[in-house]
Length: 228
Image (cartoon, rainbow, N blue to C red; front, side, top):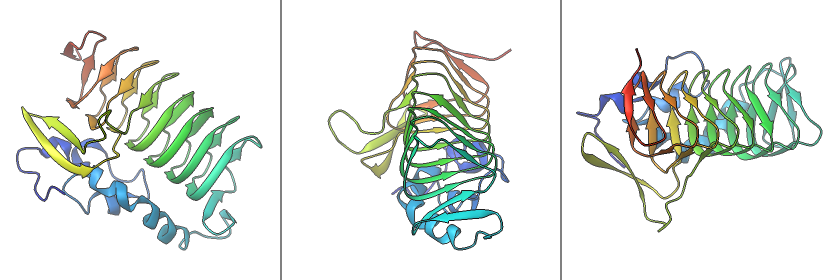
């Protein structure tokens, strides 16, 4: 794993997210980069689950905690090591495979699949999305069919491209990190190791890789402009 963030401060959790919108904040800030937290999501959920109040959360099986105000469709599948926060809605045929820390006020939509991921409060992944080995910041939103591709086609380790450099992650599975308020258009593909800064917009049908600066717009042809 990388042990320094010198020159790459925009990739740190503190630059991508505001604190206070996830129970995983202590985990994310333990490391130089937030993707280094991905292998630790499962164990973190198990520890956090033991601290949750029975008056607020219902425990299902050994390691699933669902807030009593969350709405879960009877057709949704919820795997192991999952926490679902207050007021979150899990819709028809959602597939939460496991190791998912989902904040309050989120929307997990029809046929959306989530695996080994952290979703901050008020995240919306409402229609046919795949969110794997990824972290989505406060009020991030993905349009219908947008996916985080989490494994390279040659199955080599994922790198993050920033400033003309490739940062080794040591991870075979790493999808994307979306900063707070990021908007991803319909059917966009976020390639392994994509990191998107706060308030950025990704156009529909875009093919995205590397780091996208905050307050920018990524167009379908790969052109990136600054928001006015």
